[in-house]
Amino acid sequence: MSLTEVMVDIPAEHENNVFGQFDINAKKIERTFRVTLIARDGAVKVLGEGAAAEKARRVLIQLTELSRRGNTITEQNVDYAISLVFEDQEEALVEIDRDLICYTLQGKPIKPKTLGQKKYVDAIKGGMVTFGLGPAGTGKTYLAMAMAVTAFKNNEVSRIILTRPAIEAGEKLGFLPGDLQSKIDPYLRPLYDALYQIMGAESFLKNSEKGLIEVAPLAYMRGRTLDNAFIILDEAQNTTPAQMKMFLTRIGFGSKVVITGDSTQKDLPSGTVSGLDVAVKVVRNIEDVKICMLTSKDVVRHPLVQRIVKAYEDYEKKEMRSGGNGGRNKRRRN
Image 1 (cartoon, helix red, strand yellow):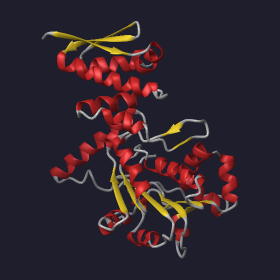
Image 2 (cartoon, one colour; image 1 turned 120 degrees about the vertical axis):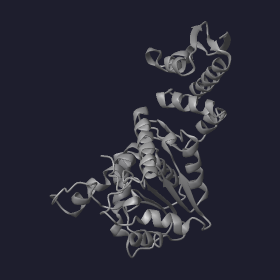
Image 3 (cartoon, one colour; image 1 turned 180 degrees about the horizontal axis):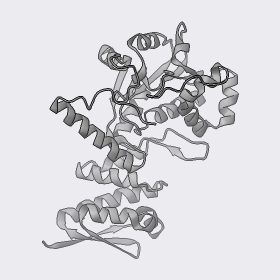
Image 4 (tube, one colour; image 1 turned 90 degrees about the horizontal axis):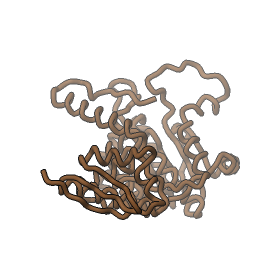
């Protein structure tokens, strides 16, 4: 095997960001493509077999461009850049990064990080009702929340309504103490957490007191017509068909709806049909309804989460092929 040497210009001020702490990113690129990276005087020399060295060079170019745009390079960025290079789509990485939604309270930009997430965000922008389906960690709820806060701040909607079914995640919690609000708050905590991070607790509480932001169980939606609102239904896999029909018929004029869920993590009683599964089949051909399927490639939590999700997907496919029941009645994550 003959070695090829290629050069990549990486300015010194971006080198540490691209290579990562203790060169962790560089080592991953070296292991993946079986190349050697040598940094010197604002440039990196890539030594390896011709095609592999060229792929490693392309990954470094994309990561350097992300760094130039002010991003802190994460392990997830490196993994995704590598996967896009193998698919000859690496230019998409910088294109995705241009799609800024908003900033968190701490000034951190919220952007889609994968092609699947970008398609999801574009669908929310262009559709009246968007279904975001996929495994844990793909940003379904968080991105929808960021879009809702942005629309609210831009006066595109007059209020935000966040809802989810109040159903136990495979555990019997017994009788919770306190008033009705304190009993349902644990089920809605993930929605509060996202709101606090994006807009701050003080702003949330102020708008909540005015009735401009509402976080409530799905049962509270019955009998209402929701006009000029950004509505998010989270954990929709735990709705019944009747609940989902009730929710979809609440939509009023000037509203935008995002429905998120993961059909592999149902907490419904055994044998109960999920309203999410039925709805996707019923409304998929209706104009202004968008259905986005996110996969393990779109997981943006710790890379280990991505590997776990992929392992479960492979296991469930294997069980279905063998006629087993390993892919049925999966319990959701903690």
